[in-house]
Length: 235
Ligand SMILES: O=C[C@H](O)[C@H](O)[C@H](O)COP(=O)(O)O
Image 1: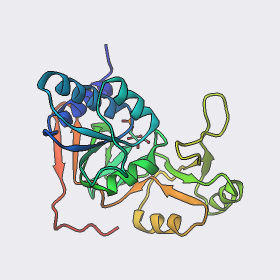
Image 2 (image 1 turned 90 degrees about the vertical axis):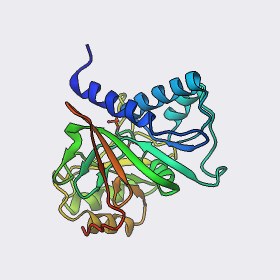
Image 3 (image 1 turned 180 degrees about the vertical axis):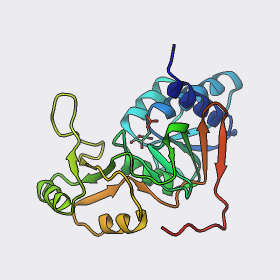
Image 4 (image 1 turned 120 degrees about the horizontal axis):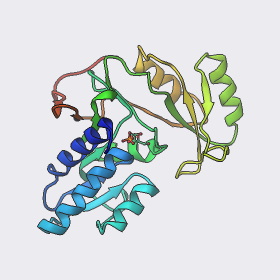
């Protein structure tokens, strides 16, 4: 039998599939929670004849969606994305998130920023008062990445190159490396994001601030939290 976390991911993923409407262009995130969403979406396509176009955020999601017969287009070929459904590694009550546990943060952020609406699906263990318990992924250009690693280390950001099971440095779909920062608690996500964005060699970071509109949280009871459009969160 599946563990609770898996059941909660499935619950959130399946609920998200019910949000998709005919003729939508749908951003398809990456990860184990999104897998449940994509499977449920494919079922609706087959049973109800739902007509949608998917825009994927990783090679893994592309393979899964293709195998399930979902029509795909690239982010550059669609005029806009109606709704993106994605997972997250950690979310706080100010709608800040950490993403990139599956190394897809760069394409995920591009798709998210081209979507009219972003919905995240998580299980309840990922919802915290303050983000940072999950190591923050930073995607970096391979050239000079060792120097960058040293700078992060000197700044006490506890960097670690992400590696594959066979021990080599993991390469993202865009051909970059990931350095994970073990921070435990990110009190000022906006300042950290700014620092990373000013650092040459950093392609993107896993802080998704002010991006998500709604979070669906699987648990004993499914919860949906929606950001008020006028509410600004200052980090
Ligand atoms: O790079 C991967 C993504 O940001 C995922 O959406 C995130 O890691 C959550 O994945 P999962 O649903 O497998 O926990």
